[in-house]
Image 1 (cartoon, rainbow, N blue to C red):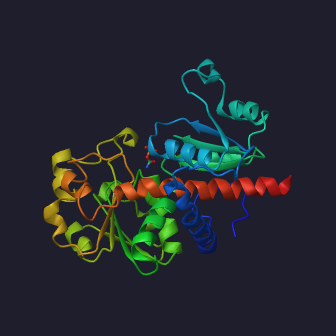
Image 2: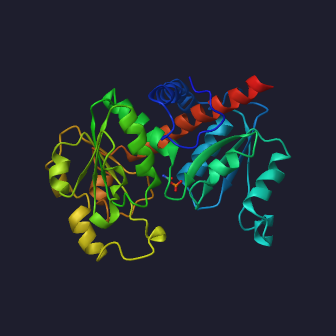
Length: 310
Ligand code: CP
């Protein structure tokens, strides 16, 4: 069961809670394949998107998920709302809460902001990515995708490659995958692989990408987050690509049923070659498809909780 008011991160969830969300997503997924992709489940519920950072996948996916469950959705614009007049985020949320929404979906460049908001609002709060901290629904849809293809998560070897330091996707996946019994290997330039995960059971750090590829069941490739890098973490993009880019040549060492994943957006030709991104092992667009079902499940669970309180 999942009885929390909010979904803020996977660090605090149990394996049972994660399994509950993934199982519910599996049962809701077929709604997205119907000719009429809408059910009345969340009719009368209100979801407000507060995206203070750019997003394509997460924002559209939450909006589609909410609308397919018949919730009403609204989004605030960071350029045409009173934010530009200097209103604080907290005041913005307090004013929106006075309009009685059921759920806030929040993306913010500062780590911990969704947690702060969750502590002052009665509405459910979903963290849609906070700074370098967590992106829980991305990791849930990643685990859903792996489980759909492999049938299970336990004992799988998942290799995460690239800019781990700045990646909230990596952090949420590390927490989620290890709780579900998978083994996680982190690989990237030493400047971009933080030591914070070294002691966590199920996590290892590897400098040699070719070795790590040979035993991986899943390879998750990350973008270099140049917008969060306040110093030079790599020498040149060319050198990075040679050392840590996923090319067809490199994939020759991989298992024949390896899955290639990327949370997006991709920098083709830097961290991943186009032939790999669009190739037979890639499940990158499956991740996007599954994101809608996973977010339907999360919205449903949090909205049901608010029904129960009424
Ligand atoms: N994966 C992800 O968070 O993509 P967006 O930034 O486009 O939402």
